Image 1: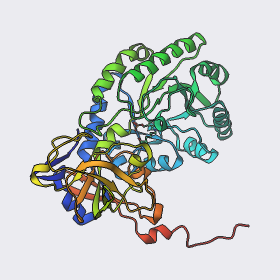
Image 2: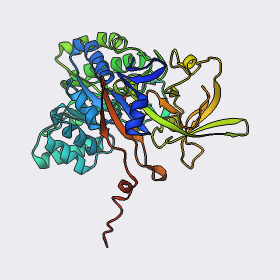
Image 3: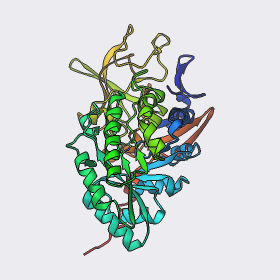
Length: 434
Ligand code: LLP
């Protein structure tokens, strides 16, 4: 699952005790394991080897340059959704040709920059967006490969905020309109519409939604072939699950076993495949390391107040997500055998793990059975590598956490902790505009 484990009663990342990381880097800090990032990438690559996909890591899940470089060195391309993310990918040394660019609201300057950089594929989400891309590509006299994001009306059975493949979402074009879309725009001289893009939601813990979506996509490809349109690439999207609880998610191989049989005909046509996983690579590769500042009672409730909360990890507050949270150095008999929302052992006490912000919604766990906590304890919030730092905010003028990357016994600071001075950097110089 990952390289975070209790050894001799304390939590290690690979060969380094988290206590040592807290001592040197301070808290709050996101700690990533290189071996876990690489292992997850390699497993996806080998599971899907029969279709030889370009695996474009989803930068939005965890975009630190060192993480991107680690994955690029393994052969990853990048899935980007903004010029900021493209900039990160390029800075990490990834060729723009190995990047796919999605997103419902690409600005003109972003489209221009992506085309000029030589983007591998622009994923198009609407008729008006395509017309804009075609206009810009013609003005630049540059050919750009495009894929239409289709919305196969499949329920991924995940949180409604991250469900993207049902008919009534803002993403993509429904199947009925897709055929017409290709008839209208499929022969543009500069914006070469030649692929299909799918991303139905995240996380998706069963294989059926993928099977259903791909089955509908194959039917569309047949219809398009009748119209004389040849689909050259399919991007199957991301959305594979992660282990927020032990063994919660299907493995890369289980996803592949369900999806691959549907790709046989497409492969025979010479279709090129893309995948855009983020969470399944990064989530279990990171923990958020925190310190308990204070403990207190309020009525019947007990609180452990930590040095970060929703500002560092928004997911519990925003989606009600479960993140297994445990002391880094628990009492000997309280080393957790598994990560589970229903873990029981003698001596656990229900507590809320909260942050320092001025919001009642600033929590990481509510009524969670945990060992008794005290000021100064270190806590690890697990499965925080994806959509942790990338969704962190500076609310309440909280400087962003540090990020470190562990490789065996080596620990690198890959993003220094922000200072209060950093917070003011963009406000000191005032420019008169009008
Ligand atoms: N491709 C597209 C077009 C996407 O929109 C996403 C995620 C991905 C790939 C990567 O999905 P993944 O493999 O990481 O599941 N903030 C939420 C997740 C939002 C996902 C948005 N799109 C969370 O914390 O759960």
